[in-house]
Image (tube, rainbow, N blue to C red; front, side, top):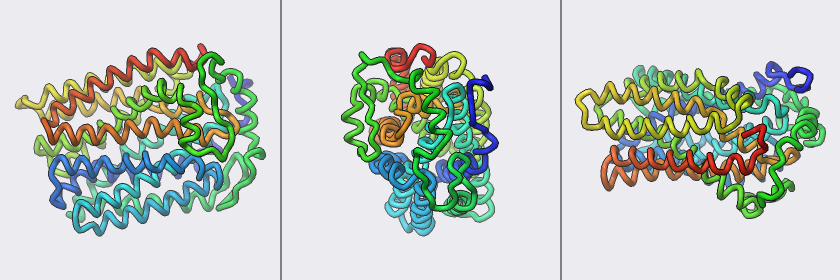
Length: 434
């Protein structure tokens, strides 16, 4: 394989590529389990606390609208630095929030900045990596985020315990954002040699050119699918969606449901912890341990996709998450529901870890090689739409019925998503990538 995969060195991108993403993810991982608890401490009901937690994902969805154009125009590095600055503003609002509504505003701003940061990193990796190791590279990037979601709750649990206030967890993300911005300003981009706010022409990126020449033929979708990829940088999100509506409506629906089940897990586990009577620090600890299980499988997921195809990762992920949601709904009436909650949280993380990097890998498989940002923005919009909708569904069903019914609804959606992926991945991807 070494003769077929030129000029991509993981060590060269470790600091400038993965370190900023790791810092950002640690901060986000610290606040995600805390958001519904912070909302509850400010007087929000269980249902409204779920709504506030969902706003970080709604913000990501709204942030997808300009993110493709922003990244294409100012470059990945500048976009990430700007996103970190906007996130700091939102986090400062969270720390001083006098009520749940002001907290919701800060959470929304953090979500918008997260969308831009994530797309910028995804676009760089898509252009820089060769096809033969794409899934492993993007799964490693997914593993970086999972590392943050694993470490973050532990840090949050310690900080909340020491300070006695839930809002103190937001300072963790502030520090992480500032450190990520410093790293991006100081270190050189290994693909371009750029430092700080410089943005060299995309054509000067040797790794992108190499990856383009090596991968275009293998990743071009069949001509009879009706998917026409937009290659101009200036195209906005909705124009790109219109041009690629066939693949985004079909395969993108499956991506949206993957995002929905993942996002639902992040919201329903803290809410379930509250409903079974766990205290703040214990809930954060359990979710952090579950994150360790998730994180441990990131490279295994990439190996599965590179060796056996994308479905070999996507289907076990979706089916496993669905079963976990059904078990969570079933366990709500049991005397040992706390023990079941811990076991199911671990099972959800196991299933989610098997699918580490699947959305980024599918997006990279489908995106044009020269200017991927607009298409990736549209692709991420479909996934983030599911991520934003799922917590709202959980919040709404919990308010109308119960959290157990909400968990059962998510399980059904997971089975539907598995069927969509089984139907459309073979249609839109070449045989060697399925």
